[in-house]
Image (cartoon, rainbow, N blue to C red; front, top):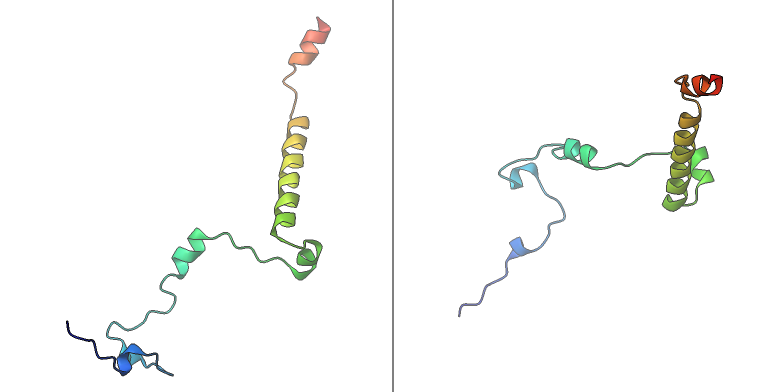
Length: 88
């Protein structure tokens, strides 16, 4: 079995040039894909101070969603059916 001789190509260089890569580079090649696949939100500093971690933010948002859904149900317009039933 032949032994493989290690050369300088097996090690990282201090600097690389664009000409070192035959295909070249494209800046931000995967940026749009990353934006579509992630839900990262940047909070204002004053908001970030109020929440110590991710769990606290999620808990607060879930409770806000719950309150909003309950409030929406309470403020829907009446169909008039209850009024008709009371009138008899």
